[in-house]
Length: 632
Ligand code: ADP
Image (cartoon, rainbow, N blue to C red; front, side):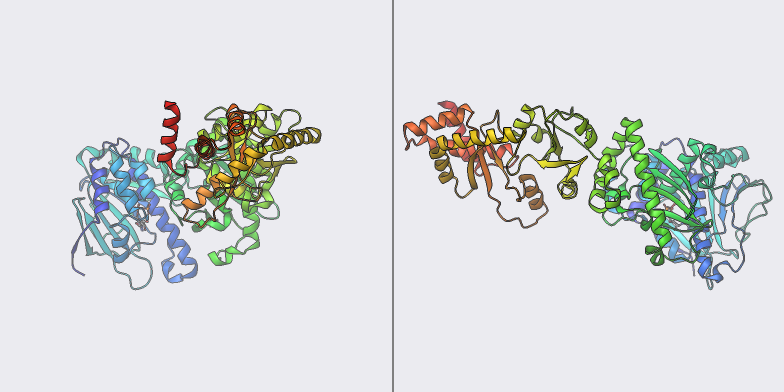
């Protein structure tokens, strides 16, 4: 192979330009990123070595070494991990690894000042942070396994990189940084020691530092390093909770997720008994980029007896907890287990169920003891947690206690839990009422609330699209049924009262029969039936779905998703107590043929449509009718 010049993919050059010109002051994080990559490469080698002995035929003692060569002006980070082939180099260090190239370009358009850790976190471009401190970066690497050749990658960050053959006998990777003049602090051992302690203490392999070595020539692999490791090397999850400092959890979390923010919650568990495992789980503060992308990987990292079997084991968590990040370490699983085998392994199922319980308990505690924090969590992930009501019957009760909703009586910006709702129910209320709607402000104005609010009842607003699905499983709480207020017959009060209401309505219906029939005739293509309303106090009319039919917001949602929805005729309820209806009745009684009635019926129906958040049938005609009426 002779030296070849390649141009970076456009988005990588963009990353480089951002990194090189960034004013970001914590340039030191480059070391964390390079050590993290080295550690990942050793994890991969160790794991592949379980099944392919040729990969570890040199019986390596895993290590990460850092050398400072002041004379040459270089800092080197060297590992004996998996190494990379020419093809790997081209693939890994020439394009954006994550599937987010397009998203990347869009994200950049919006941002003026880049936050480097955020950039790294979202797009998996940690390697390029080296250019914050180096004017030239060289990678010399030899991939593990038979028949591999050493390769050298080099770039000064100016749009291209070269690939060339290299002389190297020992498998692994060395990153050589030619430090910029103003970045010479990274030659000092105290500085490197400080950074390793700060960011990489938990790395499982020894990290050593050596300064003032003989100038290193290409081909000399690792100069001897005899010093004690700089890092403690104990996996955090193996230590007891009381020993681990918050900063240590935070750094590990960043190492694991590339999320530069602190986690919202840490769950550190050691389970003993029938199955034994340790888990270190994190709830992020915000829904990451990955959650928004379809088919993104999720799950936990699995260690079996200190060997990282792999990342993203989704079988360790139910799907509705896919935002949870972390590590599980178990000695109860065989080392040679594959993903497929894990899928229906009894131990894995037990671990999953245990972890699920731990996360749900931790959320319940947070809800009880730190409501503000819980709200933050719920805004980010509540929507996803709700999916559990549909899929996890075993934990239904716990999940019901975790969900929260906006409601008619809850102040803007706050949410109420089902328990809070029930606790605040006035005497005589024996069901939980909810209104499905697209947004809170439409819900607040809905005529469907009137009779309930008049009684002092609260109504939950189901405004998340997912709420429409979960009502199928969330049918009762604390022995109380959940009832939609925009459907069927709304029966309020005790039996006696219901009987009275029914009688009253029957009486009035007889009185209003001819008007009802008239409206029915006018709207025969649009509605199923006209009737007097048991639920209105202030509004003149509203539309109600049949007991078993889809309500308006569900119908709109289905249409938005391009689903076929058959035309659903709704019930049109009018309020005999309203002046408008009374007025129409007297007009009608006076002159059956009063032409104005045709328009009034149309306007009335339009009002009802707007009230449920739907559009009027013919907006131009609707506004014209209103204008005429106003002029009069
Ligand atoms: P990320 O680590 O988030 O994937 P990076 O830009 O840091 O992104 O690295 C890109 C890829 O390059 C890594 O995923 C890995 O495959 C490869 N890589 C980086 N450093 C090393 C190393 N020291 N040894 C082997 N492979 C490496």
